[in-house]
Length: 94
Ligand SMILES: [Zn+2]
Image (cartoon, rainbow, N blue to C red; front, side, top):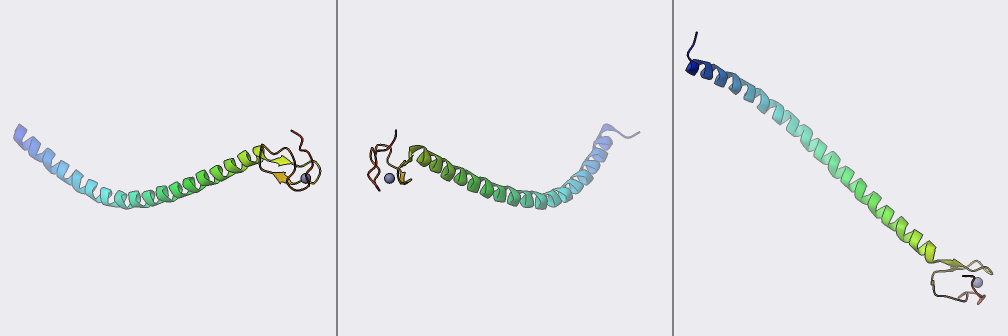
């Protein structure tokens, strides 16, 4: 039976081996992480693009909400304060 010191030495050796293995797997997983980071970066780009698209869509909706369609000629009047159609002069329904 070895002393406590020897036990620790063995444990240290085991740990050393484990760390060596860990080192290998860290290098391996490091490559995976880089790939994942690239994935995330791409996903962020996609997210950013989707967010911008949503913003454009929202702006379009807001514009549509402020757009009055002339009942006479069908012109889109984007001025919410407009009372008369800018194209044909017809009174706009409010
Ligand atoms: Zn009109």
